[in-house]
Image 1: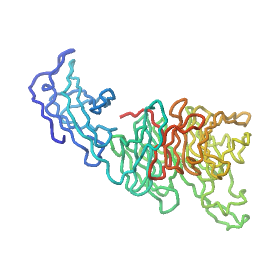
Image 2: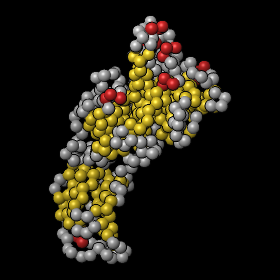
Image 3: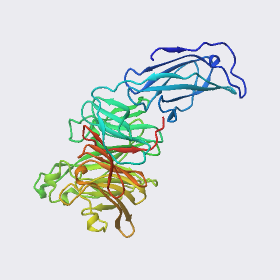
Length: 454
């Protein structure tokens, strides 16, 4: 249904306390169509006769109990609302609820059919399913090739939201507090693994920020912080005299750090690794100087402490947000005592569950007896010791020796994003695979989102 649905109107006031008001007194017309630029966004155009607050309720025709409802909005004149989280080529019903003065009004129920997915969008398939209870939520994955896509699929792999990003997507994260997605996009001509810019958009597809920051060498992680600012991993090239290491007196070392940006993309603060480690003390620096430590993620806990993972050195760092001091380094050749069996071999994606209690993905990149696994590190900063309170190994066929992540769906179910297996993998806490959503590209991560604010 693409044309306007006309509702006959008459000029009657809306000021009726607790009264049901005829739709014809509030609405002049309603129309619905598929958005020109996105098959899974429906545009509902509403002409109001009076100022009102309204919401749109919509649901799949065959599943009336699974109902979506937009946020309440104030409106007068003509308003356009977008309906999202739609399955492709599916018939939906909707109605509009409005409040005007002390009265309320609800339209009749109308129908639409969502669009067909574009031919170049990634494909997901449910290749294994042994779950007995259906979890709720969505999975965020992105395709970095050109053209790239950011996608949200349901827990069975059906794409219900996407955004086309022609230049490709390095990484994307969702912020529930603001209902926005942040991404590093593009492929830098200056540095491998780095992107060219940042993109912020809401679920309606509005691009809130697009900025070229190629000279900052952004890579591997970006996310919104509680204060609304943005934290982003970036390369930090610095010149050193490496003549004692077999190099010249002016060698560029590509280390890592993070930058804090405001919502407009202006740099507020920055930190780098050189205050903690000195490349001149690394005997192999001439082999590593082009990508010394390879940071791949940054995150924060509820107290604001920052955590970074470094893949090449297999370490998790906690960084003081005020002075940049590194409180500890957990992992291979770190400064925290830990049982050898919990030392990671490749490390990605820290999720702080509490201060000094951090879920990480150990890639097991050397292979052999090394396996991809999720670990929860429990660190005692006073004693400079740590242990792993949880270990969830992936079967070898689902492992990933690079990229990837692990996160909780609930207390008994985990989600692994496995680049090596090209899949989002559900497991129990013993590592038994319960569901597999296969994809046709290398996902950097598979992020679980319990609720979406839209």
